[in-house]
Amino acid sequence: MTFDYDLFVIGGGSGGVRAARVAAATGARVALAEEYRMGGTCVIRGCVPKKLMVFASGYAEMFDDARAYGWDVQEGDFHWPRFRDRLHKELDRLEGIYRRLLEGSDVQIFDARARLKDPHTVVLSTGEELTAKHILVATGGRPVVPEMPGAELGITSNEIFLLDAMPKSILIVGGGYIASEFAGILNGLGVDVTQFYRGAQILRGFDDEARGLVAEGMRAKGVDLHLGTNIIEMRAATDADLRGENMAAPVEEGQPVGVAKGAQTDGIWVKATNGTTRIYDQVLFATGRTPNTEDLGLDAAGVKVGRRGEIIVDEYSQTNVPSVYAIGDVTNRVQLTPVAIREAMAFVETVFKGNPTPVDHDLIPSAVFTQPELGTIGLTEEQARDLEPIEVYCTSFKPMNHAFAGREDRVLMKLVVSRESRKVLGCHIVADHAGEMIQLAGIAVKMGATKEEFDRTVAVHPTMAEELVTMKEPVRTA
Ligand code: NDP
Image (cartoon, rainbow, N blue to C red; front, side):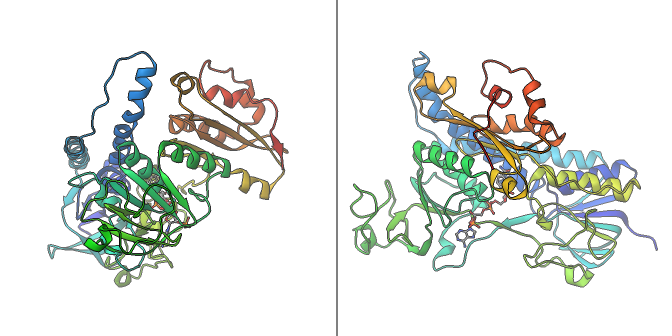
């Protein structure tokens, strides 16, 4: 049977674009369909704009630091529209690069939605039908909003980059990556931020001490974090709400009617499980993401989907239908851009280079761009001690630059070490640039370095990261 293409990729995000380009470089005839903007979540409404907002928000503290370091600076206001317009110009530029890379690789681009008709056929929203020897689904995921009265009044991370104006106050719901990162970003940009997390501590799944320090740091910087708290009900604020009626007694002193500082008249009235009622300008739901598998024709092609809507794949990213593969967030394995890119490379290696390559999901370093920032690789202390006897090396201190500037922020450096093999099983850093540090420490951990090998490396002085090679005694064993 002859096909129109050797590979048809559905989705132009980090994973899909990489797979298309690298497959085309092998001489394969490749097409890619994207219904929205080239670049996907990471480039258009995720990692990239988020990181630029992290940079923008960091300036607030830098003004104070600069004064402490002898500079004569005046703090000005943050102009959201000025930043947002520049941000979108940058995203347009990046999208253009992605598109040109595909075109330069001779990948045929379809600016259309695609759905599967059968294991070798896709139908585009233009009505066109195309066949391919292999189909790769890389459609990513999207934010989910919990079902509750008034939830439609809230926004998600998709909308945050498009706002006409910065809210004066915001309630962020969730305690994961996105909620905690945006709490810091918006707080830094001068928004009055309240965060509700339903559990006992934010960033579930990360090392407990690291989570604790991040939460403490966020609070110290001004985020009003409420743990064990959720929304019961929300609705558009009425005039009566704004007069202070319909308000339960607020928890904090000094806010007699429970109106969040600076709330505007078109605010959102929120009733919480902690008994408070408040009016916020915005409510941001960062309550997880779900794979984009709806209306993709997976049933028609016979592709199996799991309980959370994720496409079920094997270690080669192959579905139960041999001609259909899936990579990235749509498979709900590890929702990280570099992982989707690895999966894309392994897919091309397996299918187009005849070299079956499973994806290695073990020991993935990652960073949470909270303020303070968290970098992590490997096992948390809690995970490791359930598996084997361990030693914990840990230090927390005020870094030189913050101490000089009179800031209270502390840093955490932590190694979890196997007592038997001496291998560093986990490394957890809470500090400025923790993401940069963990990328490098991650190489050693991935190579299976022992604590003694860390220690043999001479310290780089004076740095924060030198503590990773100078911790002599374990703080505890377990
Ligand atoms: P997460 O799964 O990390 O967090 C979702 C949060 O919402 C959790 O705290 C969860 O609570 C809470 N939640 C879920 N349902 C409800 C509900 N009904 N009511 C109240 N709270 C609820 O998802 P995110 O959306 O933050 O991020 C998605 C993924 O994107 C991450 O897992 C990560 O892989 C990726 N990402 C990575 C980044 C990075 O690398 N820096 C940055 C941003 C995203 P509970 O813990 O109790 O389940």
